[in-house]
Amino acid sequence: MIRIEVDLAARSYPIFIGSGLLRDSALLGRAIKSRQVMLVTNELVDPLYAHFVEEALQDRQLRKVSLADGESRKTIESYYQILTALLEAKFERGCTVVALGGGVVGDVAGFAAASYQRGVSFVQLPTTLLAQVDSSVGGKTAVNHPLGKNMIGAFHQPSAVIADLETLNTLPPREFTAGLAEIIKYGLIRDRDFFDWMETHLDQLLARDTATLSLAVRRSCENKAAVVGADEQESGERALLNFGHTFGHAIEHAQGYGNWLHGEAVGAGMCMAARLSTRMGNIAPTSRDRIINLVARAGLSTEAPESSSRAQLLEAMSIDKKNKDGHIRLILLDAIGHASIRDDYDEEALLEVLGPSATFQAA
Ligand code: NAD
Ligand code: GLY
Image 1 (cartoon, rainbow, N blue to C red):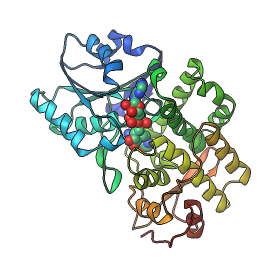
Image 2 (image 1 turned 120 degrees about the vertical axis):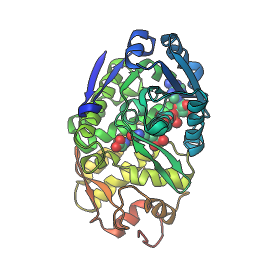
Image 3 (image 1 turned 120 degrees about the horizontal axis):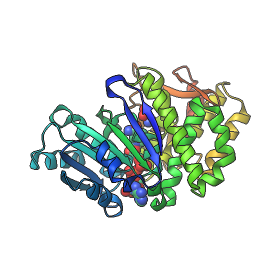
Image 4 (image 1 turned 135 degrees about the vertical axis):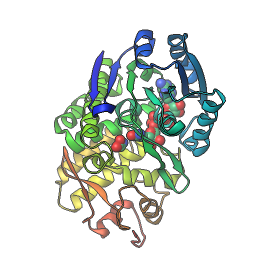
């Protein structure tokens, strides 16, 4: 079992990574300390994995909420469903909310934990590749609003993350591929060696080879833990984790939540950001082509969907948490392995990477 620490003084916590960790009742029992436990999962993950948690916590006062599945259900209504279950169970401030599932369950359950009685303990049991390498770590919790992705939420760190690699065996291929986008992201923004490693090990990763997967999840979590440890609430470096996300969130929003998976949108968004970085003269065309090639080999789209116009994407990009003084700010590359937040991009070049025709109305 691998253990990585997220170093946040009083809010520090461990990430455990390994095969079969959900079967380890003792580990679950130690990580989830409360007598009152609200297990939050969804209708798809519940029959697959909830029994492990239920068996491990037989001696606790355990209740369960099984949400409807999908990004389109990452809503204030799902959040409210959890709060209602907590109140109906008369759970006290000493309770723990446990998220079992992908990033959607983790984000909604985390927001409920952040706000129930002004904040209760939270444990993440991520079951998708994307959640294991990214969303379960770092304490960002949120629901979507029809006008903007992740626009309602809070920072609320979990007290432990337990990533059982065995759960990835049941993940549909499209969901697995979506998770690869966030892994590629770490290489691009801060870990050139990891990007090189991805280029040589992508086939083993796609075959879900356990040792390769374990290394990819570990390295991703090490990168994420380092960034979060340095900038918990995104006053600087943490914004780099949003590489490809301004474009990606716009695609998700413009296409309707759930039609493009988050990771798929981030994959295309990273290629768009790479093209813009080359247009600005920051990275060589050969670097851009390596990025686009790796994203394509992973099985992800490298372009924005043709059915979303530039105008739609620009409108969606105008509602983004990084924006300042009405101006869209973007994470762009200075090299493979190095990124920065920029607002000095060429507006014509931005239009070109978005696709055909529109006038620029960023503000
Ligand atoms: P998801 O939660 O929708 O899960 C993907 C699909 O896989 C769902 O249908 C789910 O039910 C199913 N599933 C989950 N585990 C499974 C398993 N082991 N076997 C079979 N099916 C399984 O999507 P996701 O990609 O995990 O997460 C995407 C979300 O995460 C987005 O809402 C995104 O905004 C958010 N996110 C948050 C952060 C953060 O820092 N909080 C970071 C990145 C992404
Ligand atoms: N996925 C972006 C962040 O955690 O900051």
